[in-house]
Image (cartoon, rainbow, N blue to C red; front, top):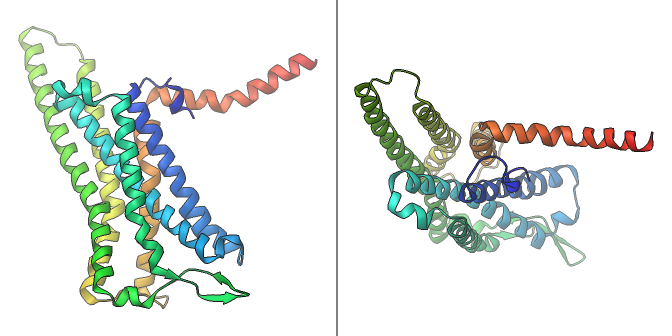
Length: 295
């Protein structure tokens, strides 16, 4: 809500991306953390446990996760174009183009996650009502489904991870070269005071490395453990053992990654923090106004 008001000093294009990223993160928290995990754990035999609803929640959870990752990659590419390709900036880095790209990613992500519907079956049926989502044994024995799962891992997060890392390295390289040239130019002109432009560029480098570092740190363990399971051909884990704990930990890290990008991009910005403080103070100011009105 704070970002959508456009008072944080971002351009319209950047605001669209940040709002979309925050929305995708929120949807992932709702579908995966709340509906898929918390509701099923604490409200057994609720409406969410019916197999079709459970399967839909699974699809939207995968889609929200996919969208969150690819929105970050799209935003990284947008910033890369804004810095590297000045000729494309006026046409590509616009709010309208951002909306088109985000809508395309959303449609493709949902379409790509639909096949997961066919991987589950009811655990049991009571009064002709299917309950719970159990993974079909034929899925784990099928080479085609394992290939599809591998493709899913490649598309998300391997490809976005590679793109984010590559684009950020190129962006940082460009910033460093431009800063070096600017420093030499200032020295030759006899300017010795602090350069605010250089300070802003160093903040940009720190921000870019924070994004790349957090993304790699939180997603790499899951990808590596998935590769390990494919090598040892261990597709299903039934017992609570070291593998189960590793799967749970990597899942937790991946869930956390869908909540960090917006914080890194937005909370580190001074104007956003100011608007956040104003939003926190707003209810108390309303209470003060009502007190004055009735007194």
